[in-house]
Length: 115
Image 1 (tube, rainbow, N blue to C red):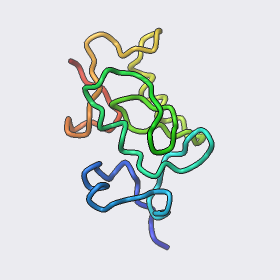
Image 2: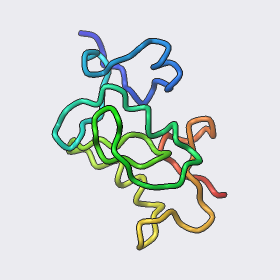
Image 3: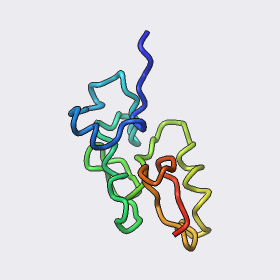
């Protein structure tokens, strides 16, 4: 049996080059939206590093996601919320002096680093 490839291990540039559509590429994991549907192209939110931090609807699956962070997976795995939640203050804002990091910073996707 072929091992599943994690979508998080694929860069947005590589996904674009390979013309990936995760609604049909079942050999690659994909985050689920609120309806339980696979997002066909979950790399959109993480490309918005530097954009004002905020929620918006993914234009590919309509899930609520956060600009600059990896696509939220609405399956029962809450690891994403735990990783991000560690860095949010009581109002749901990144703590003072922290910025959203992207994979080029050498941190895990969705991580934060001191400003």
